[in-house]
Length: 449
Image (cartoon, rainbow, N blue to C red; front, side):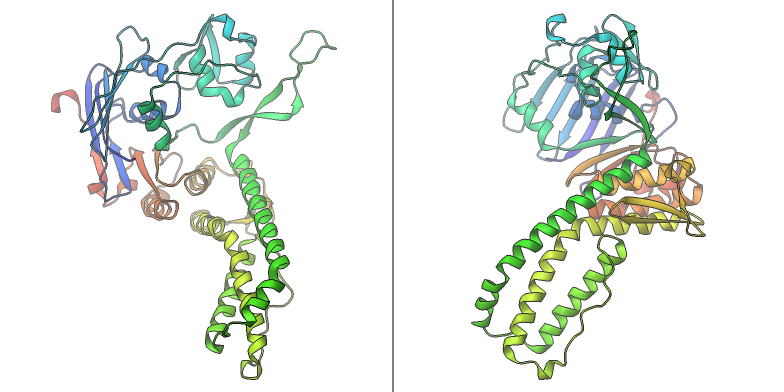
């Protein structure tokens, strides 16, 4: 399922916007003056597909239509009293019953102190008994929206009653991956499971809740890459063990077949060595003292060629474990190093690092805000996307030099092809657009609708 058009009516009680996504292009760019609703449109879609549906009732719009490529239409109508919005779904052959989400029940459904929420989600400020304000966005959230949005930061066992979504709405939300990369992307709030926080006024009474810490996203992403590399190495080792155990049996089978030609065998072995060298150079496998030495093939008998053929097949299968990771890491390092001046980015089983011109390692947190924005955005687009996703990026130009902005669209095209996603950008930057105004949709004021 893919989105073909987004229409928002009554945005801020003033604007009506329509955004058509060209099926032949991977990138759509929306631009317009400040206050016309670029960011709000992205947030509407993020909430619709990823968060508590009731929170749409607090957002400043009257009606939202999302049209899919099969010509079905999801409609959201917001009530004027800011209660739960009403959802409906029309297909070319059927109209589904409308749906209104139920609110989270009251105190009997909450088994933790509400006063603790601010401790674990520092960006929230409690403004009423069951309401909090996001200090970065000024968004006001009630309890069910707080839990739906920040459940991953709360160490409590949150027992939320299952929301009775109709099957058609569940299918829409699960069949399409939509992700927002917002402007607050340099700091990551995560739960530190290794430390204990003393939240009691009595020194001998300690909470068992883990502490939430603010960490620079660039550091967090290096740790995530380390995890991805270690997972790939584990898969590589497991596959190697399996192939090694079955090698004798497969060799016997190969001896019963016609051995490959000398030319084919040379080509296969050279390809193995080339692939291994690329993965070693990328930093995922250790450097070996010697590479494979090709014998004088004219003097190799048929049975030996069969052994080498099985070896080449096994080596290819083992190295294929790195295929997905290598392609993304290679693009990540290449693009980052074409941007950063007097510094070098590299990857290893310990994540990625940045070195100065003299080879000394630089703390990731010491990078400039522009350098961090570049690295974080690259990592997000290469490693944080699912196939067939719609990735929304708000103000991708943040903190970036004009020269970097001019290169972003071509980088994004490459990454979208590699990771197989579509992108919806909200920007003020003509440098990002460059000569691709055919990808843009301008948001107009109410006098031009």
